[in-house]
Image (spheres, rainbow, N blue to C red):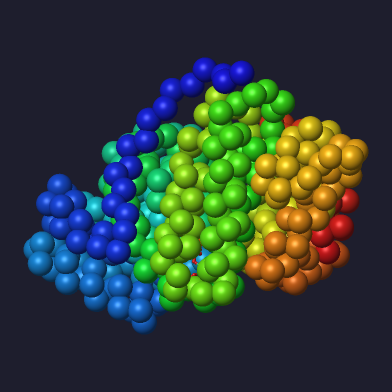
Length: 388
Ligand code: NZQ
Ligand code: ZN
């Protein structure tokens, strides 16, 4: 049964090969000072930077450079961005990059006009912003996180060995996002497949919870089938527009709040993955991939019917004559085979995690209660050991 909910999504999307031109429609809505946020330089190599700067100049904007947003953005970088925004009276934070740039822009947006320390306020106390929020716009160059149409912002604190996500309210979502699948063509294969697994796992996190008949689960199955199909095309031909556009669109729908509506959700793979990320600074999607199979095999007996449905509907397992357990196992075996084809990490040791880190990673793992089994600390350690 669908639970009660309210639904709105304020982010305006522009999707397609010509979508960047719509930046011209958005810019006049904001003041002169645009803080141009980007990462380590991929947008300079592939020419996106020049295209964006030309549009900003044509619209008479004052460009404030804010480069060097690292994958898994840190709180120190957020402090720097806040300082830049205060000194330059930023009117619009324009993130050009992947989830890291979009998440970072949101963290800066809620901190510029706020006196409190953002780490303490948003990532330790999980408060909502109580100050003016600087508007954010995103030009996405990597498909995966869904950050372009959600209010999530994940920030790392290396000193405290923590990586924490805050899901803010609608008022923190990007005002607009521009999604051009061609912009993702230059991604290295490792980033492309990490993004693909991130998308798939976002859907799993919302699917593997609850036993009710829920429209969201049917939507989730369709999204999973689409991303699996397109991923196999994209690894053969990364410039296949049809596949890359489907991957980009699936990423947005996998985590723009829609498929979580009216149902419970799990999110334990992300809690485990984020804790691994806090210790290793590894690529987000890879951390998820490396803990997923041990986690799902662990909880499978507690949500057996859903795992059978997953096997049948997503992986096409013919369950006739199979016990529920055998069918569910076959579903996960096919998922594993797909992950191997993609080439995602299947062990946290591949990401730099070592046995002596396990107690710390387990300690840094937030335990949530929406999944099929509320984990004890010792089960977390066991899953992490199986992931090594
Ligand atoms: O920094 P540059 O040089 O731009 O290179 C980036 C970066 O090294 C590169 N890249 C991006 N677009 C490219 C490109 N290289 C060539 N061509 C392009 N078109 O890819 C690397 C990874 O980028 P990043 O933004 O870090 O990846 P992703 O989009 O996966 O974002 C990861 C961050 O988002 C958080 C993760 O935890 C992580 O910190 N997440 C945010 C969520 C949300 N807002 O809801 C949910 C997710 O579960 C996730 O936790
Ligand atoms: Zn994710």
